[in-house]
Structure formats: structure tokens, C-alpha cells
Image (cartoon, rainbow over all chains, first blue to last red; front, side, top):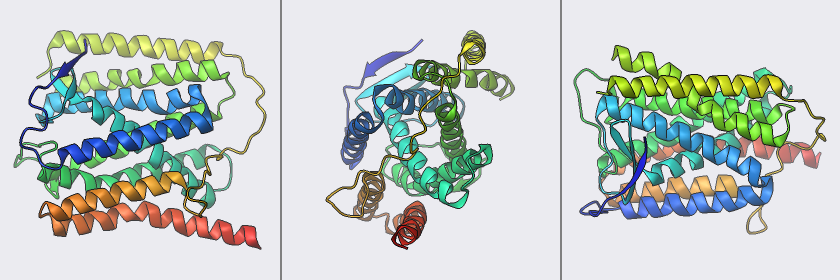
Length: 215
Length: 104
């Protein structure tokens, strides 16, 4: 279903892409080491792997339907009629870790009660923070051709980026934050938390089926 | 367009995952965990008040802003930087308040 491909024309004619890729990889590596040291291996897997799965699935599905693409990267994951650079998957885990941290910090200080409502507000904050970051990242990426959206008169654009993209960022980061924190706060053993966290992102496939059949 | 077989495969994976998750959820024993301080990720860098994750976020947005400036994308980069600074500003406002409460 999914294979890794190597692009021989890596970074051919795309300025600044190398800086972006290098930055994402270094930040990802720092956060990974930091998470391993602070949270241990099981929690780190829970924080990094499910979001990579969810992010890559989301990207592949959106690509299959809207036709945007990522030119000039080295490693690609090819599936469902689209190709997503591996570094984009790592980028999703960086986004979740940072937005979850900031959302949790702000959310828990505004809503002090330790209940589901607090988790919901933290997730909304994390999703909004992700959209804030995206308002800088995506227009810049489109301008520098790190990824390209075909322009269409039927879609609404904000800074040359489809509005649905921002909605997608909010949904993926907000949803994964809620899921991660709910599993975090459950009273299952760490092994079971890890298994539940790894199986849950694939449930999103069920919701994608009517989307693909209707569009 | 995605082929019908692929959609069917998605459905099978999705349903299998749902069954596996429900099974894991309802067969799991609840364990008593020691109540720990949830937010322990307060590792400070350079022995200052700046913490690692907000610092990395700041580095990311600054690098992207600089790339924007050098690629003739000045106006949108400034607008983007303003938006991207909102999480940091929110974080620092509440962090400052917390420090204030702790000092009292």
C-alpha cells in the first residue's frame, strides 16, 4: 500500500527548500531527544507516531482530491494516488508537540478544573495556534514552491492558500491533541495507552470513505 | 480520483482499527497511577526563563520570516509573523502571570 521513493532531482531549482527541510529535521531531532528524556520511550511514541500517521493520511487524501503536490524533496511516501515527503510527516509531529505544549500551558491556566471541558479548550487552543503558525508557513511555502496548490476559481483562498487547508490544520492538530490528552489522562496501563493511541488514527479512514465517494 | 478498491481498503482498515480500539478500550484494566504533576516539561535553556519548546517555536517562525524577507515576500511575511507570534504572546502573558503568583 505504501512505499518510500527517492527523488533523484532533489532540490533542483528550488531555493530555500534545503533550509526549510534542514530546519524541520533539526527541530524534530531536538524535540525527539527532549521528549525521550522527559517522557520516556512509550509516551514519546504516542506523541510522535500517531500524528505522523494521521498527518500523512490527511495529506495523501487531500492530494488525491485537490491535486496539490510537493516538488523537489528527497524521500517520498507514495500511496493513495499521491506522494508526501517524509519530512512533512516529521513536520506534523513537530507541529503537534509544540502546539500541544503551548495549548496546554495556556489552556490549563485559563481553565483550572481538571475535566473534559478543560481538554476541549486545550485542544481548541492547540488547533488555533497551529492555524497561526500555518498563516506564516503555507503562504511562504507556496511562494517558494515548497508545495504548490493549483489555483481554482471555485475555492476560497487566503494568502494564495485554500481556506480548507487552514480548516484541515485546525482539525488535525486540535483532534490529535484531544485524542492524545484523553489517552494521557485515562487510567489504562502505558502499554494499552500506546496501543489505543496507535490504532485510533486509522479510524479516520471510515470518515474519509463517504468523502471520497461523494467528491 | 481514488480507485474504488482503494476506498474499500480504507474502509476495511478503518473498521478493523475501530474494532481493535473498542476491544482495547473495554478489556483494559484501570491501574492506579501515582498522581504526578502533569506538566513536567519545564526544562529551561541557557539557565534563563526561556523554555525549550517556546524557544524552538520562536526559532522556527524567525527562520521562516527571514526566508520570506530574502525571497521578496516581505509584506506577507510580516503579516504571517504577526499571526504566528500570537501563540508565543499568549504563552508569555500567562507564564508571566504564573511567575507573578508564585512570587507572591
